[in-house]
Length: 235
Image (tube, rainbow, N blue to C red; front, side, top):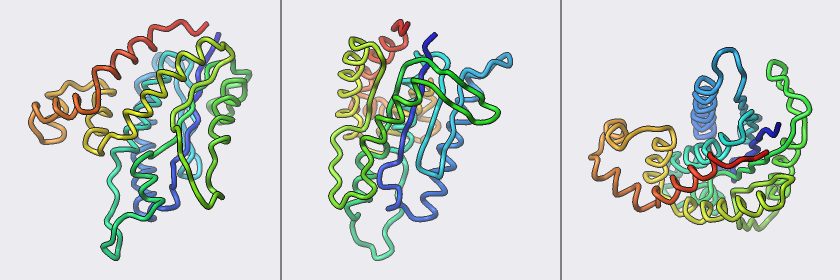
């Protein structure tokens, strides 16, 4: 049986202030806890997610169909994060702009897992190696000039499946990297299953405003692609 893993790293995390890093970690851990509560029922551990050193995320998903929504939730959560004004009142520096524009790199991988011991935090197998390797290939920490072309990746041992979802995820990249923090928050709440009325109540805005934000970011196309992914047979 194939499983899914997600490996992700926060882009330009060192450009965040200490307070921002703490606040972002709290939000990510809150999402991981929510997903853990939603997917782990009847003593079955179907999801495991962890934040490592404040800027690296690993997730195990027993059901591969869960992976894309989880990845997009992480993407939209980080993209919706509000940055503090700089102390000097100036504009954003280049690294903070990278964070604001791209937020996070995420790799989904489908494959076998040889060892999953959630109690001990052990994840070993083809899937976690694949997702981790794709993120490592994008590493930019020690580069003087950072050029980011893509932030969403997909990998598996099936060439057709990989090509198919790399193409779809590439379109997500183009759409979502242009999303404003407000649009990102609306998409995040929709991915969690909230109605537009519920989102309007949560954000204390009008329902037409939520609808405009949804249309501006292309929610209908995102939802159709998600439905396709969640019905796909990864075996």
